[in-house]
Image 1 (cartoon, rainbow, N blue to C red):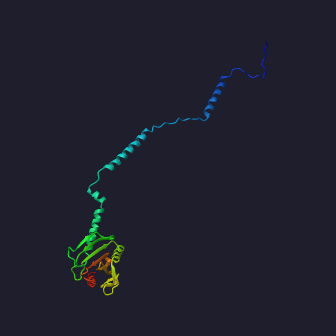
Image 2: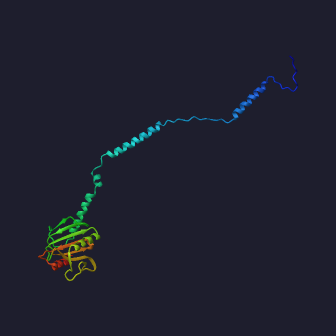
Length: 235
């Protein structure tokens, strides 16, 4: 076994100096903190129970409010009458129309000569009267208050269609316009003369009042001339 001397260029493989070891450790530590940190957060599990309890409480309050509104007794009688004003208002309107019509009847009727009847289609009120006591007055008559001008025309046309139309006494056009002596240039309505079941009949509309008047005598009189004369002084 032989030994040789180390060559001058051989590296030293002996133990490191303490200072060199510490320097290497320090460098490694510096590199560790220079690298960026990575964080993996854990998911947070929130407790939703309080929110659910609050929503349930709100729903319960709303439900109680609805039930209270449905079953709470209604107010006094004034509230009930306000909800159903129809019948009272309709009755009052009909009575007012009947009273208005009664106030427009021609003179010559006794207080109990006229009575309210069920109005025809298109009418607000209608009355039926018996004998008029003025000279040449009709034995029967019907007076009608129309809803409007169109209804008045329809009601008048019904009378014409159910009558045997003739010219009025004095060769007056029938049906045709009639005028008041005070306003001869202005038509007051329409007049027709005729016969219904052999009964002389005179009917006329009064446009300003929306009123239709139909009067009749009998086979024994008054005749058409007398009835027309009565109309001329009572229209």
